[in-house]
Length: 248
Image 1: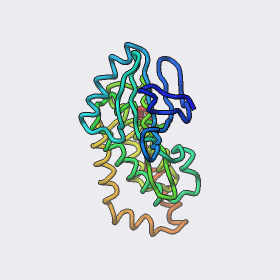
Image 2: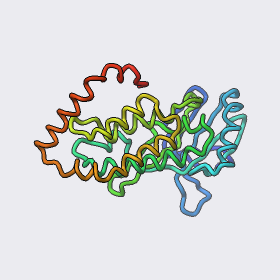
Image 3: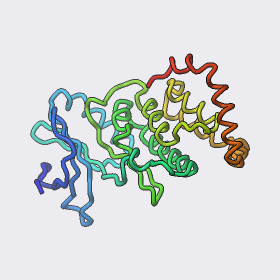
């Protein structure tokens, strides 16, 4: 293993990415008794360092989840986080996964997003993306691998739009999906919710429609097929106008 900077405190396990003044790799803290595994983001471009350094220091002041330390060496800047575990989201969420489990994972993903929403917007937008979402199905755990590519640092509502894409992957658009769930996915896709908090509030409101969920879950296969057909006919009427408003 290659010795890392910061006085050789870390040793590299796996180099995830290198190029364009940015490196990401997993490493072990050889000074810690438990040899904790970490993810290191290292930035070498001077302009990138000047731009991102204040954001990471602000994130630390706000209690950034999983942040271990920040350090500089030889003009480079590194942000070290606890490493996350799990399979990539799309690989974990396979066909045959129950909708109940998908909804539970959706809730846990939103809780991760809420934890990140305290960070500076540019950093939040960099971290919340599909490649960073890891899932452990056995424990029903959703984690964020804190890989922060410099090109993803941007203002705007990128994090909320990414939440929409992640929700599409988790919940899926099935022919027999509950209408309110499809409307929620549409609202995410059209950028209706301007913040992660607003999106989560809408998700909780959907989950709280217990009688509607109870009636939906009680339907047998033919009844669900008929329900899906009626939903499709209703949505078809304004479908073109709705799709024109999609942001992704």
